[in-house]
Length: 290
Image (cartoon, rainbow, N blue to C red):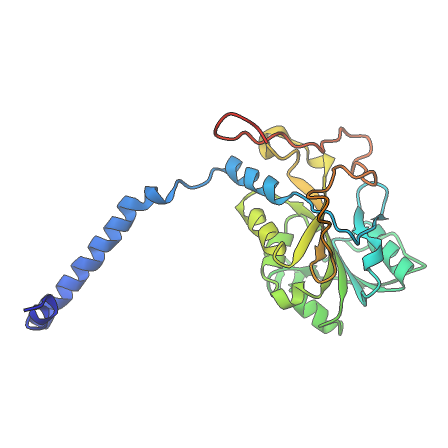
């Protein structure tokens, strides 16, 4: 008699008790053997992984140029890869949107400026700027009288769904939840994404990894206003500007595996402050560094 035949002859109540015991035993085995799966990464180990992910590649068809201000508010982008862009989006404005004004003037684009906390006080007379008293977020909601909406909804409301875009984001940490909630089809509309990332924990590691599925990471610059050894090591700072270029338009240079940093076009965000662009080496288990 097989086990199944034997079990089938048991009363229903007994069969259910046996099933429950089997499930409880399986759960206990999972808990007991969980350490075999490896310990949970420490915060330092997550930052080491993030540092590895933040290695810019070199594109053979990218000519870098600085857009925006000479210091804080300036971003490097591939100026020769903006020809097909139909609209620009700038998130995080006050007190002025030097990046959006520069892009609008040079390429004749309408720049949609979003900030529900600080409107632009510095005008852009030679550009076409449309200010929206709204912030980007993972969902449509109002928090403390401040309206938020998703990137997808904002593009749709402006008639830009499906169009090629250039986007700048500097929203003090809200970039993580906002972009993680953005569908891949919307991310793929963005030809170039210039952004300041404000964090080094597992959420921001996941964000960088997710974006690298659609984009090449082409440039990295640490914000010297966020330089700190204790909080960010082995990263020089906990805030850093990145340039992502869509894989649809970027062409990898096979002769140059990684970009040289810092770029000659880089400048400290705080012009009078100590700069911190060179990361500490990562120590490997054998005691060497890389």
